[in-house]
Length: 296
Image (cartoon, rainbow, N blue to C red):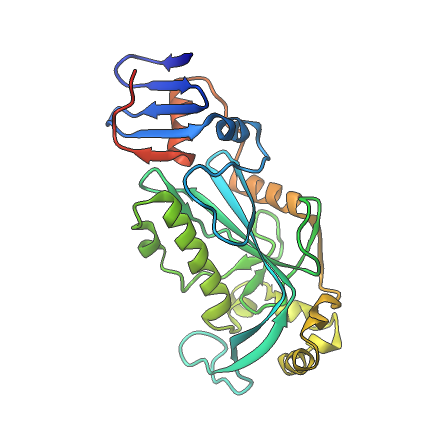
C-alpha cells in the first residue's frame, strides 16, 4: 500500500511506500528515508538508524532531534604523541607559540560531534562539538561523563547556554568540508577532521585566555600524576593504564543529559508535523538526497 500526502499537486509530494518515506521538492530534488528512522526522529531521543552509508569506526550512538544530529564517538585508552606548548614558549597561543612533543596516556575519549543542516540539504559539522573522558567504556546513555584534562577543551563561566567542554576548532576548515557532495561521506570526513583538530594540531593556552579556562588547567589538582605535563609523561612511562585510576573531574551528568543539554541549547525540538512540507524538510535534513524521479 502507498500512502500519499499532498499540500498542492504542484509543489508538495510525500509518499510512504512499504518501509520507506519518499519526498520530492518543487525544484525536482528527491530525498528518502527508512520509515523506522523517520519514526525515531519524530519520537525525539532515540538511537538513529543510519541509512546513508556505513557509520565510521568508534561511533557508539547516533541521535537526532529537530534539525540536529549528534554522533557519539568513543576511543579506547592509549598513549598519544601530542604537540604541547613548551614551558619557555614566548607566546601562550597563536603565532610565536613554541611546542614540544609529549607522550601521555588518555583514558576512554568521548567526542560528541554535532551536525546541523548545511547549504546543500545535507548535514554539516557545527561549532558545538564537545569532548569528555571516562574510566570505563560506554555501556548506557545513563553513564556519567568526566571533563577532559586537555588544553584545547574549554570551560565557560557561566556555562548556561554554552557547551560544557567545547572543542576549539579555530584551525578546522569548514569550507573545505562543506564541498563534499555526498552527505554520509561529508559527515565521516568531518568527524576525522574534528579528531585531527582535537588531537593533532597543537595544545596551547588559547582556552585559558579566550574562555574561562581549559579543562587541563582545571584538572591539575585532581591527582599528582597529572598535576603537570611532565608528571603526566613520567606516569605514562611507568604505567600507561594509570589513567583508568585517576579521579577525573565529573560533570555530574550522564551522556543522555549532556545530549539533552546540547539539544536544548541549540533550540532543537521534536518536529511538529502539520503538512507534507514538514515531512519533506525532515527527509531533506536527515535522509538520502538525489535527483528527481519519484513515482506519484
